[in-house]
Length: 144
Ligand code: HEC
Image 1 (cartoon, rainbow, N blue to C red):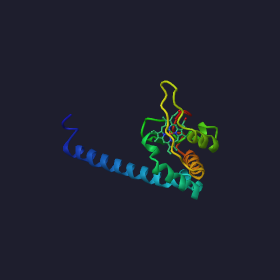
Image 2: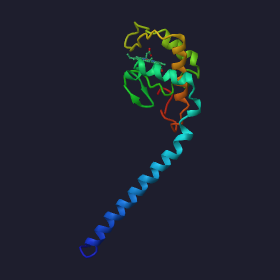
Image 3: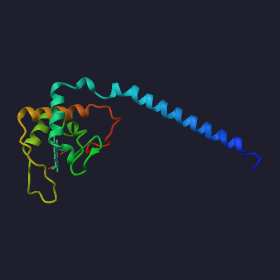
Image 4: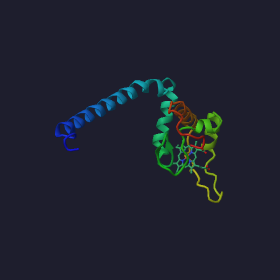
């Protein structure tokens, strides 16, 4: 064993292995950068979507919700809420508008944000845009 696994063999495995994984890392990085423009749904970013993102940030929706897995785990994932609500921005608007619905035992409730009609529509359009990002089918189920 000691004759086969000499110092120079060990050195070659070390350098060869390092080179292999550095190249693999670079290849995957370039692959990701190359794919992103066709997957990020940027054609759908309108002024309204941009306003919706602002509404999303100013009201700290991420403080309770996750969006594509990032955020807090108090309330449902919203990356696919547009699909969950039957591809209806009206349903999303109505949901946010008529909170809170209290008194259901064991159910967490969402506060009222007093958003204007324009802001409501914009945040719903923002969630529609997020739903259009190609995430390779993540989240894996409709519940989020
Ligand atoms: C204080 C925590 C909290 C914040 C902040 C919050 N939400 Fe919610 N949200 C909830 C909870 C809890 C639910 C689930 C309520 C229910 O099912 O009755 C919910 C549900 C939702 C739903 C429906 C999800 C589903 O699948 O049923 C949407 C859409 C939504 N929130 C949008 C927003 C938006 C947009 C904002 C920011 C303007 C926001 N939320 C901020 C707590 C929050």
